[in-house]
Length: 216
Ligand code: SAM
Image (cartoon, rainbow, N blue to C red; front, side, top):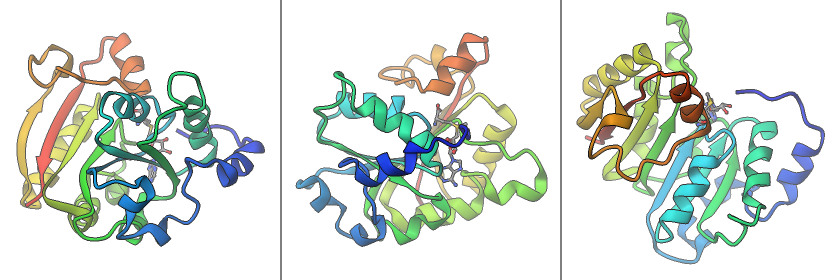
């Protein structure tokens, strides 16, 4: 997702208290940002923020960090955060960065869970390493996840889903649960928070795939 350039995006992001301006400076001490010892869950490729804000509302004992590459998109999440429903949340922060450099921002064992929702498919084979579930990205996640830390991945793109299952297995991760039809899965659908893309694709009748992979 890349929205047209929005001139106020950079300014808002630079001054908003929920946006962490120099995330590298927090490496190894993210719990100080939240002033508690609660687990840290991150969403990479957060988009407009509906998922992470609702998760933060439902799980006040988890610290959430939403990561998005484009300031024009992150602006939408920040604007949503400022609405009546979410503005009192103390357990959510935002970072504008390319997840390729995730290891510069989180240290070993610092993250308990990574959410990947409707990640860009990068359909050309030569771009496979850009997929957020490629073996290259899994190696980055392994560095920052705590032992038994998990990735939760949702997508309507079955080709990308099968690729992701294969990459995780090849890299030695354990697939603890998966489904090709999340919204009709009795246990995985319980407590499921839908993302903006999930609403869009399921309203067109596309089944949603989900896997939970546990770090080796
Ligand atoms: N997760 C949201 C949802 O489900 O509604 C948005 C999905 S959208 C297809 C993918 C988002 O991931 C885009 O906003 C894109 O900018 C972001 N993204 C893609 N690659 C990224 C990367 N390497 N680092 C950070 N964000 C990334």
